[in-house]
Image 1 (tube, rainbow, N blue to C red):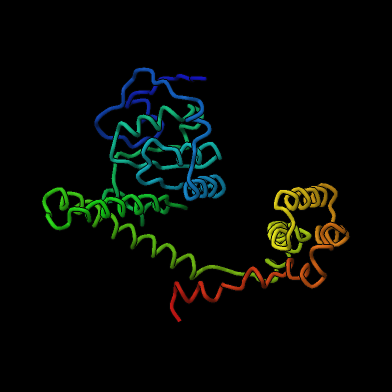
Image 2: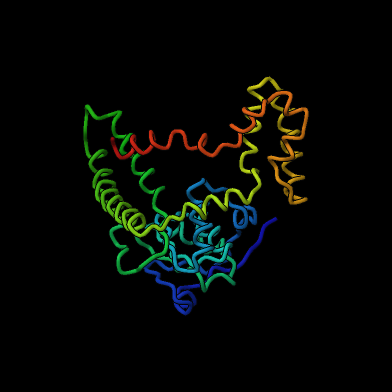
Length: 279
């Protein structure tokens, strides 16, 4: 299926509060695949950004948005987006992918990192991690010819070094601010976990049954049937699996209790924190 709609000219976009610079976008009709426009394939970071933008109710920034997969997904979830990219052609593709009804929640800027003012804008979320990842790839490509450096190296570095350091500083500042003001309620967290009736341990039960000798396919079907029935009928998953001879014949009461033990899932928390923050 192919959908078409006109990409409006500069004056029409300015009437909607856009911030566009030269060159103007074309006024001809752009054909866009409905699959691309409505069901973009997102990586995990982009999907999290899109979901957060849809939930926060505040404006979020997509830096280096390209053709706008993350921006389109965020708009589809009700988000308010400022999409920035130095390439006008890519921004044109983004505009062609956005239904007219969503124009009021989208602003586009022809800009890179140096032209964006993060502090004054007060964005609720910024999609930046892909920019750093892309810059690191450019730096790695320089390594192969490091023994014969020329302008092909320095031309790249003049862009990625300032962009990456500015971006890293911003990310660290936002993360520090988040952690400084973070409120944690352990008892509430535990209550939320227990409200699932043990369903969150279905994956661990599958692994333990497979380790005990059950075929993984059989374990999957068995665990899934109990999980779906517990969810549908509001039953306690742990109690239901404890009644099943097919499970208890493989896992003793002690092993079953270990399957549903929260502390087992937290066994490496200390090591992870030490690895990141030091001893």
